[in-house]
Image (cartoon, rainbow, N blue to C red):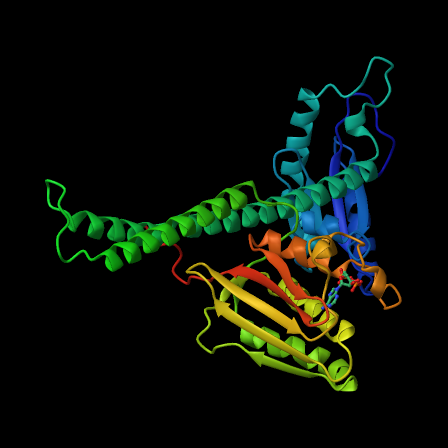
Length: 392
Ligand code: ADP
């Protein structure tokens, strides 16, 4: 067996998958010997593969047990498994030989120098190639699934934003129609439309138009959005539970500085649609900073509100030194730290990561601060809707 390949030969390729159990040694020996006795017209190339050393290969051939003997064929592989591989082999042998002979007749297997062609080259190379390719396919499939999830998330956010445009649009239309109804067809104002009501209706329409404008900006931003910048695995998240969990982890640091941290999140706050691990990171970074930069005895408040139909806003307020106005945007840049704080631990990366995460969720993050009085960091997240976007 395993003799060198001759010109025009196609081997019957067999892979015997085993594991490290000593009891298999004898069985392997028997299979080898049996194959030697069986030899037919077509030479046999048997390779023994330990699954623990080449798990990808086992996965590729969808093995569920060892030992398993696989006949590798261009058309379809065939697996023999169990304790009676030898008798199964006897059964299939004539057919395998016939098929391999037919394949040999069809396949010119030498090159011009009369040397072996690549198709008959060492099957270990072949196996390694299979491992590599199946590995590549696995990675590509994973990447594809991630991209699809990102795209789905983006589409969902855009659909939600677009759907919610109807609310301010309806409100603005009602205000304008009420104004219109206050006039007779020949342009005279009715008594019901008092000057005070006119002003109120105009103001209302103006506010709603501003809302519409802001929402369109959000939609455009989401459409251009950083889809692939960060991988998001969104799910329904209860912010109250999440904030309590982060507080539990950071609480001891605050206690050591005699700081008081309070959470004031309404129980009926809608859940958000977000990557829980990443949002935990944002809250942790902001809370960590609040504790770090606020002097001993200070107070930190975590609040949240349902800001618009589609967004929840989370705010973390401290009584620390504050941030100068000219740096309130720059602190979100990578590696930027206020000179004042360079002696403190840190690399200036926390806030830039928060910005990337929040942006990947199509939200906003910013700071309001008065020097010497404290800072409030705010960020927004999309509301979770259990039944998707209604299409009325
Ligand atoms: P780090 O805290 O590691 O320096 P960050 O990116 O988290 O990095 O913050 C950037 C800078 O913003 C900090 O160095 C600090 O100067 C300022 N900063 C962040 N949070 C606060 C806060 N709550 N109060 C005052 N300054 C802050």
